[in-house]
Length: 305
Image (cartoon, rainbow, N blue to C red; front, top):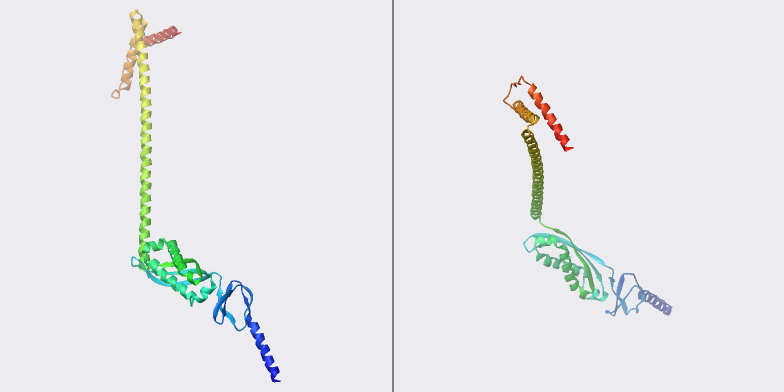
């Protein structure tokens, strides 16, 4: 009876030992194996059997990319401005044995490393650089933290600064400065527009004066040409009249007297001071002069034909 009990107990122990020696590693994880407390190998995803009692699982390492939130902290910049900064970090474990045995608390170690380097990087920059060079800050933090975590078997893929919050009085000062800059740009644009408008207006007036001068010159040229033609015609008429008088043509003399008579009457009529017009009683001579003018004109036209 005693032997049977011992056999049952041994069987139960063997079953339990075999059950504990069977290990199934999930995808995205890697387990470390310890032989009598010493690391010997790592188990990749799949089915594995350990040596009962002698081997056991040491650490279960997550090989997927992980995220750490960097809590807010106050940092003093190079120009003595107090800012509040927080961020986020992405990392992936490359070597499970290093992550398990080179550092005690991997997440806490990485977090403190990032926070320390944030203070170092931001503390060496001025507030204006801090707000305008966030990509540069991220790259510097990534380079420093990634190099520092290599012994832990960790690859830091990204470090991002989420928020940089200056103090309230500094935010108000920056808002006033931004408003002043915008007003300055608006005034410059307005002045430039007025200047451009004045230039265009001056150019338009200049072109108008040029065109007006061109027109006046053309008009003067045409008027001079007309006067020249009129003078030439008058000279020709006078010469013809003189030749006719020299030949003893009475009609020509009557024409000459009639023209002068008409010009005198025209001067009297158009005079602004003349209010009363006196016509001579002897209009027969005037009519005869006009008839002589018509006959002379007829003869001139016949001669031209």
